[in-house]
Amino acid sequence: MNFCRTLLLLAVTAGVIACQTAPVTGRQQLMLVSESDAIDASKQAYTQTLAPLQKQGKVNSDAALKARVDAITARLVAQAILYRPETASWDWQVAVIDDPNTLNAWCMAGGRMAIYTGIIQKLHLTDDEIAQVMGHEIAHALAKHTAERMSYAYAQQVGLSAAGAALGSGAVSQAALQGAALATTVGVQLPNSRTQEAEADRIGIELAAKAGYDPHAAPKLWEKMLNATGSRGQSDWLSTHPASEKRLQSLAALIPQMMPYYEEKTPRPVYKFKTARAVRAPTEHANAMRVGLWITV
Ligand SMILES: [Zn+2]
Image (tube, protein in one colour):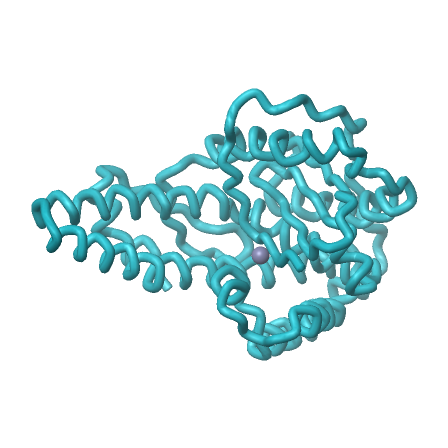
């Protein structure tokens, strides 16, 4: 799918057209927002998210679990840096958030990650499955998905304003605006999200295999996620995470080509995390432009 073509009209309205190519998959991306802007926004969002949790003693409170998550993600990050060497300068770090009711994990632009104890405990995740979760999330950051989503949001805003102005004021333009909003949600936002999810699955399973984690764990993980949600295909989850049999099949189909990476006998590189620092209290409101949020139960 050619996103640049799909959003050409909106991009022209914005006065800027910028296309980039995603790493690994080579997919064309519309980029109106720079990755460094996304990283700056994410840095604030990370602080805002973690500071109150840290105050409550809910960040990295289980030393053994933190060490386990660190050991897995350190191998994944080392592989991510091999794909994009410039990310070696990112502030890679992972927080384990003590929240037994939340099945969630994320990696923001710039490499700041978190995983919630709920997803590990409720799904009884193995190391291989944790590697699939974090590999998927790291893939979102590696493929600049936050900057891409910010670009889409920007293009939509500009496009909707232009549509409203062109149609004049009154009830008709309000209806047109609502129609346009619906069209962008259904026609742009949803496919974009699904495309990013599929891309993160594709990159994530490869990162994990190259880091020495069994690719068979990828479809198993999603099967566990599906079972945990109770009803398959519920709309709110579907809007951001199209978990389905098709997703399981797509991941399963990738296993044969991932096995040689997994079975490689050479030692796996390990990233050395910098010493953890305390997160300062947030100073201003930051909009969490996270992608890859999973579910809260
Ligand atoms: Zn995702």
